[in-house]
Image (cartoon, rainbow, N blue to C red; front, side, top):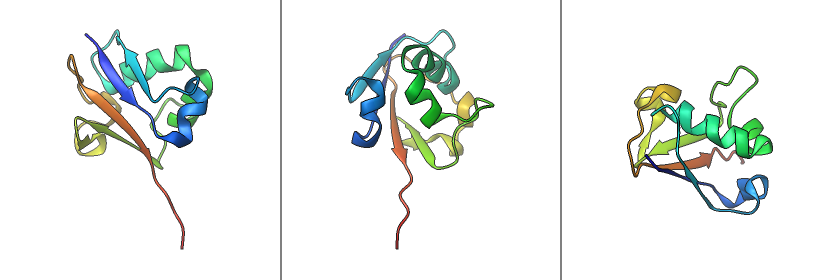
Length: 93
């Protein structure tokens, strides 16, 4: 099974400048995808999950266009070909 993680410009520097990461997760969940990413790119991991490996509050994950918090959070199921888009929240005034 192969999943694609798509990163915004803001986070690419922590993944060797890459916009897209192809991941073969051991577990078919968003957490499984992030475990593989953490092993390859530890600096990126710190921006995606907190110390308890929970999803960071101000980072949004869309699985094939659906926000993971409306699914099952980090336990959301991924399938072969799933695209995970990472979109950090932006604040300003």
